[in-house]
Image (tube, rainbow, N blue to C red; front, side):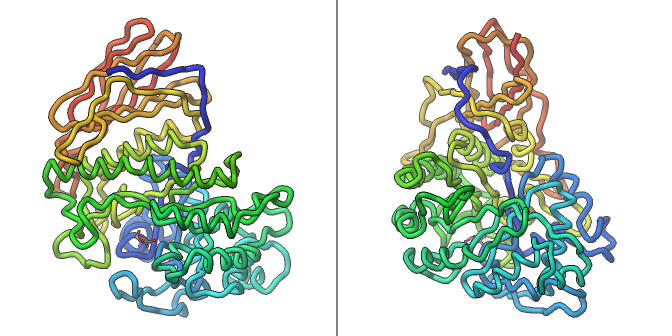
Length: 502
Ligand code: AHR
């Protein structure tokens, strides 16, 4: 098989935010995963786990979405500010019925993002909150003058307003966020977003409208019918800057999703088929958006994606804790390649969720931490952040799988960074045999190549007893000859090559 690369044809810019993450007040994501409090025995900086923050910095985390998810539409931000001992305790009704003590709130979120050095993406409450509550939160977070909310923030110890890069106006409002119709939400969106103000000289906040549940294209069309504003007032994209799309790979069905650790080859290929479906979801949503916005000024944000398996035995079903195998890594690699390929429209992706929930990059248990195979994929793909997508296509790839569960045996994406280094991500999903790919450049001759590989049995995973079963390794399975590079990709593996031209 051949991978053709036109090294001179840049197609679009890959925003770093495509490699973003999502954190919700759910299970042990925030509490125990990211935040332990400053009186914890676990090593922390102002309450944030040092080991987790360091690991996330190593994958160059570009943006972190918070506080939900479903939790966002029940979250009343004022419960999470002020002296901790006075903060309200409540039941987290969505997720496990446990007590939420609100010790992680607005100030803690911005502290975490400061430590991570990432952009901020705050999700507001439309489902059970008022316009006033949302608008006051934005005022509290960002206003630098004299006002009731800015004064309250100062009383709570933060003189300067923070930067909110993205603000989500509701979450999944077609379902858990209020069970609204598109028409009803569309009008609410227009109303609520009006009061997401950009105060005196601040960086404009990018407003994100709730998009469809995956392939609910009717929702997309109706929202654009209601909310698209053309021509947009100068310096704005009208009512919205971003449109969110959510899609999870559920291997079987929602009732019996299937185990994260024990699965058949058939279920492996089913996961891959379902992962590849992301391409169609983005393509069709993009077509509908382009009917209104042909210049692609409104970004698509796939701000929840990943594998959703059954919870691990003996864990709280509401905590969504699952293991993470090479299968998950393959889903991540294929999905990130799809995002890169659609980077003309897709400007953000947020893996659900960052620590201890669903397809995490990190798992923790007390003071221990383990990096999942998916973590290593993000590490290998970090070179694509901020690079330009290059034109590339496969010739001679074949379908692999069982019965209806078939998918192309190899997936890829290619980018070029500001130093002219080309990054090729090339994944062999075939669990039984290696695949030889001849990379054929248009004219360029190869000067040097460095490679990394993530490889294993489809069911391999890392845990606290065996944390390094699946780790990124140096890859040497290539031979360069002029403008052709012959690569042998082992079974079930992901390869990243960094190529310099002569
Ligand atoms: O990520 C878990 C949940 O999935 C989120 O809270 C919700 O938005 C989605 O349904």
